[in-house]
Length: 49
Image (cartoon, rainbow, N blue to C red; front, side, top):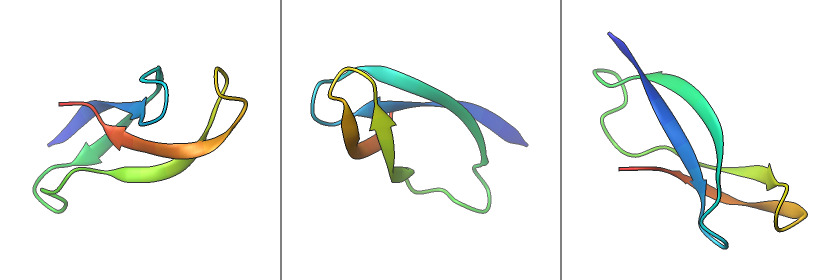
């Protein structure tokens, strides 16, 4: 029941990370601070729709 999701930088819009999550246990969108190569700093990344 795990689905692949793409994490997108909220500052520049770059799609940097691919990860998985269980949609039954976590139905809300994932958001976390990750490093963005384009921005060269840690920014908030949200799950792409």
